[in-house]
Amino acid sequence: MTTGNHHDNSRDDEREHEQSLDALARAWQSTHREEPPADVDLAVLREARAAVGKKSARAWPWTRSWTGWLSTGAVAAVAITVLINLQDEAPAPVKLPPAAPPPAPVTATPRASRDTAGEDRARASEETQLAPVEARRKAEPAENISMFKTEPMADAIMEERAEAADAAPEREMEQVVLPPAEWLERIVGMQAEGDPGWQEELARFRARWPDYPLPAGLAEAAEDSGS
Amino acid sequence: MNGLTMALGPGQHVGYAPRMREDADEALMNRYAAGDARAFEVLYDRWRGPLYRYFLRHVSTEAVAADLYQGCWEKVIRARSRYDETAPFRAWLFRVAHNHLVDHYRAGKPETELVTEPEAPPESNPGAHAEQDQQALRLHTAVAALPEDQRDAILLKLEGGLALDDIARAMGVGRETAKSRLRYATRKLKEVLADDHR
Image (cartoon, rainbow over all chains, first blue to last red; front, side, top):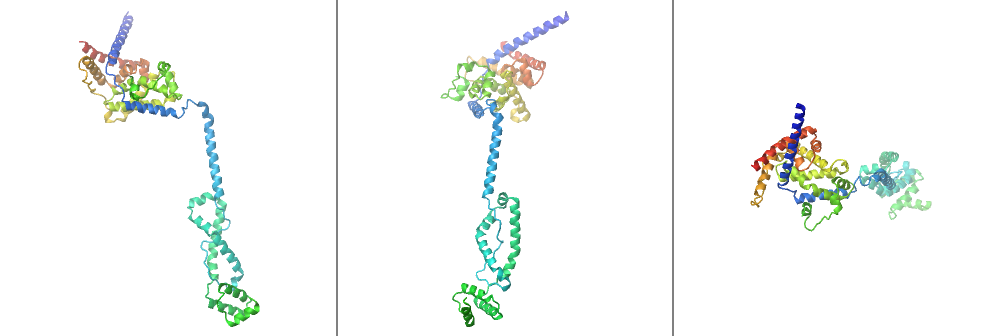
């Protein structure tokens, strides 16, 4: 009986609450009906449109399975192509000139190194041809150079440069620049000593100084020998 | 002229198809998630007022309410692909709103303190609507004076039209707790209404 009363009371209470809530809702509806500012409306709608402007993930689920792989493959292909092109464009000299080739407007080759004079001239010519390339390489930032060349090539270049740097002082010592008078004295001395190389040295002198007067004995000997 | 048309301006007319106007909220939200922006416009027009007022009754100023309101819709837009169509849209919308509000309270900004005195209604119509305005003012003041949990429960009911289970879910509490909060709030507001009728 008590339980039944409790249930009845509870039901009445519930009904009363519902009625109160309905009355409250009606009263609430009649209160001011404020609305959001117009600029906020526009901002929200603009964002909503922009969000679906780029395709919705739910709209195209079937593309998701392969578009990811396709884009990854495309990026990889472009990267490999760029790498190959960069390697092709990078200069790959096998032989590099020494760091500082000596200027030699007039050189007199000592006897001991006369046999290698031709090689020196050839090397000087090669250096002249390679100079712009070397200058360009020096102008390049270090990271660019390392990006373009492969490791074995870099090792070869470094070895060549080291050897050339070692040989440079010796060549400078061999090649002595002499004034014409001293050069002629040296040639006369060679002739007097019976050195057969005097004629070749004289020919080099005349090529460099064609109008310089020769000593009488040297001129006659030269005519006799036909140089 | 409805609110959305007003927001778009007199030269801009949305022009919904009649079928769209009758669509359920859940169907519209699904269509929006699939990329139909016009479905969102219909949905927005339906819920812009109740959602704005839900925030307005919670916070002190219109500027803060507008800020919260806009932030809430931004969350809805971002979460569109996660919407579960089996749940009522209004329950989902107000759950997002409730969580957004809680985040805002937790940020603890001084300007987000709860309402103590709502703004007075405009004095432009002192004649016929004066009594109604006074009642509205008293109701708003009474709602603002409620404890935060009770205020949230009653606003979810009055503005969101949520059922008890949805109120409980939105607030993250049990059904009985939500029911209790709603009862206490209703009782206090009923006293305000009773005073009006005396």
